[in-house]
Image (cartoon, rainbow, N blue to C red; front, side, top):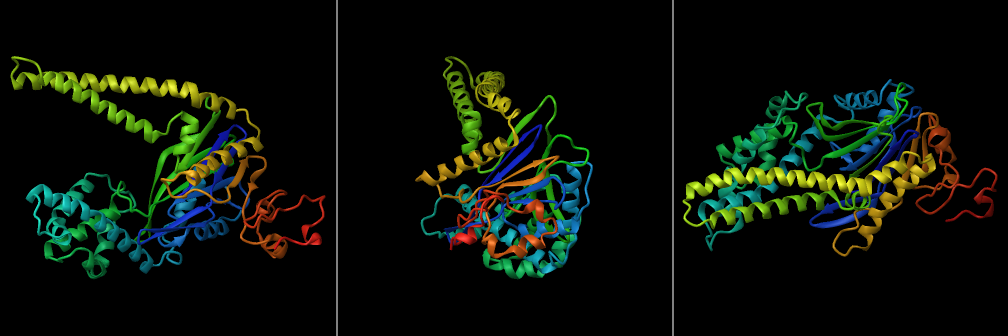
Length: 459
């Protein structure tokens, strides 16, 4: 996981990301450093951040983005949406990046994870239908309840809208039906004809349905300026993967645009709780939990009062409940809307009013600080893994200056690799500025300072 922040005002957008990348295997977690913030174009003011999965159909996002940047060249678009559309069009049908075998492997991995998650539901179904039996093992209960678990999941997924690019899902699954059967048998206990057909249907819906995303989903944030964007914009996407040479993705929340009436905005991504505590006084997770629990408590109390009415038959009590509970629900909605407004007035709105007038360097400081808060909380908490941490990469994108690195890590010493900067197609745009921190704490000197190599470079 990670923590990422975008801070926008009328001057531009600051994007910040931590470096932590977690790898889980057999209930063990290892943490490494990874790049998550990139230029989307070598010459235009557009940046991109990646969170959640670092792979797209088993290919690193870093590779995908840099190949696209080479293909894009100096082309530009009138609006930010043009870069997003070009990026996703580039990803679809790229068999050299996503060969058929890799696409099939990704579908099988996603299906395997889905089946493993269904085992818990299968056990719950057995308890629901048969009760507790002392001699029944977990494997036996999974085998007994798996068909019903598959049916319930299929029925739930069928109600979701289909993805417009995934109309070929049946053909994709038919072509790989033999692999699905052979490689899923170890996970489905008994491979009966009925269960195999349910498995094929589950795989088809996993590919086809827009609202069904695999566990290895990636989130993409694209922000900056098009040629006719004089104020910054931002888009967020969920990307599932490439299936049958077509990309399954969806936009979240349309386009965020800075305007005269909305001169600033802050958006947090991935692990957002700590930043939300600062911005809103409480995280959305706490706020939602409070709403749910308080609403449930008030309704239960109302039902208990009605059930206690003397000399009232059951039909009359049910009639009272049908009339009272909607009134309570409407009242709770109004109450929490008022709480949200008061919360925004006290916390978020004053911050946004300040953000609207910040210069570019302070935009970067705000973004980096919010990511740093998340990193600090994970570091000192005894109840959470340190899934946010490492150096914080920060960039500021403005219409006039383009994409400018404020803080950027490298895995190498720049004085040993001058060819790296010479070979950059747009070297000046990505060359580290004076003061840039590196992974080994090397610092690029200002131009009027002597080169650190003359004094003995840090080893």
